[in-house]
Length: 119
Length: 238
Image 1 (cartoon, each protein chain N blue to C red):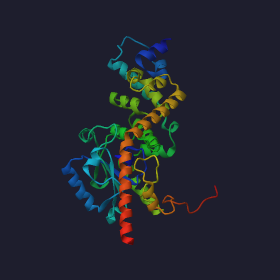
Image 2: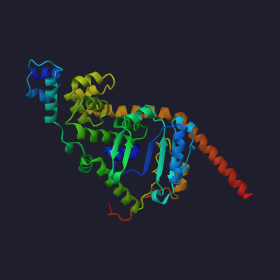
Image 3: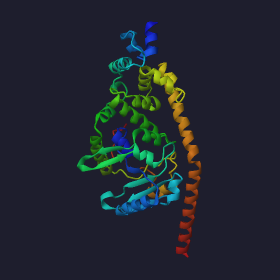
Image 4: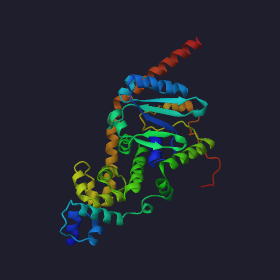
């Protein structure tokens, strides 16, 4: 009961409420906000539990490093035969089926698999 | 804005084109026209590069022929559904300092998130990643402004629950604006996942409705172009 009251009044979240007891500090005061931050920071979900390793690395990078890596990835994509033309997207209001057919005679996207493992 | 901005904010690995939000005033369009000429960029598809189309919310598409930007596509828009006018977007922009002394003026994250709320399924994982990247980067410094942004826009159920239960007073205040926060406060993850999906579908429907008259205009332009092409071919043959 006490934990639920604390959780509700101070918005500590369920784990935070178990650690901190209601005291005489006024709700909305700097102290109660600090308690909320402390409990929130102390019990955060890990990035690993939310997203794949590839995206974890990407999220951790600085924007400038992502920009450089993005240039490299685009270069690799183009070197492998990728096209700068958009994939046909029937959901896009800009999609023009006639234009897509004119750009790609066989109707297939610019990147094709050259070698497959059999799967 | 678009894919390149998503790269900078951490939601995309690369983008094949570059999207710009522009101020559609004649003087600015003239400057843009000169810059596009430097890139040897020509319009592709419809509509033509005219102020009226931009004012109505259309995107104009270009492809560059300059050797240093060969094949690069550029899309420009002056109005995006749900966003404020260019002046307001410009005031809130983020400036990214890049290598080699360059800098990029990118749409602010909240504005980019709003601009990405389209009818296309592929834009929604991008929105989710924009929020995840921002959340993981800043969650140890949860300012009131960030807390409000996360509660309004997070699309990852577990993270939304974490934020809503940790700041439930604010979450309750925002519930009228975003009813699914009720599920987040209650830590009902399954219900929240369903509610997030429904929220996405509703927003996609609103975007489709917004684009109906614009799509009709595009179709009319395509028919007119096809008709002119047909006339030219017949003249050549005869």
